[in-house]
Length: 86
Image (cartoon, rainbow, N blue to C red):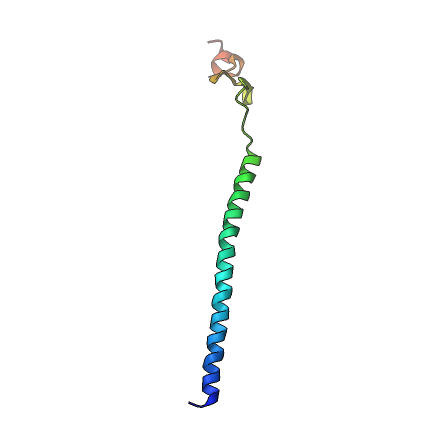
């Protein structure tokens, strides 16, 4: 083997080792990015759907339906039977 072949092998091995080191660094950062993205997604979901305080015992819902102390009740004027007089 002449000197050119040996230098080529050493150069290729050096390039491969640098690439492996760079890939290892990227993979280590990728884990942190995924964890951070998961936390950001969870925070966004909590922001978009705020929880109701437990002290609220009365809510007005759509079309006159009401929830009083956790029991759904319907407004009698919004039912089809009330309009027919039943």
